[in-house]
Length: 302
Image (cartoon, rainbow, N blue to C red):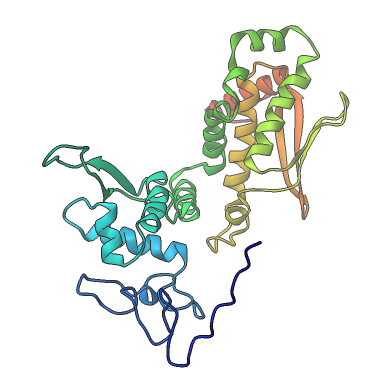
């Protein structure tokens, strides 16, 4: 049976072949005349990481910077040579950049037999996953509606009614579903289920009616809270935002042609509770028409 002979100890001052001693530097640490990059200065480098190492997001950012600065598409090998890393490292990060749309792949020109080279270049477009500030946009639009409309609450309610149908799944506006909702009392529950699901998707944390005698939907969260209280803008727009929410619910239910609607929204009856009050759709519609008629009647009241 063959046995292995223990390796002889390495004399001091000598090293085993293929190994580097701490005082030796490779191309990643010392410039090699090829425009090598010091990874310790790359984006995302963390204290405590050894020389020649960097976090993956930092390498990816640096690779993207090189592609953006290059007037010509680059190959994996040319990028790996400039960065003094293995080609597989570059390939790994390029796959991520391709997946998120920040880099595109193309075939280069052939100069002889064989396959054309695969090249990469940065896409010149805004990053769809970059920073956003929709709160500022919402604040600006709400402020404009409040200052420019003679009746901001009414305008917000009508805006909500127009947008309400867009909140529902497309199948809920199918004529067959609408006909079933009109033909049976039980379809009241179907309409409320659809709207409750839409409210939940928006972040209102709704509690649906507990039974046929319950005429309320309890809302445990407001996704527009910063606009309502003014914590986002310094100015609260509760009248406009709550009216908009009321209109959204009314528009959603109206698109289902169901027998029920929301005729009132009581905000913050408790610190963590708003209550939407349900009513028969025909009754609420008649009351709304009467209110519109009274508002447009120029005759003085006696």
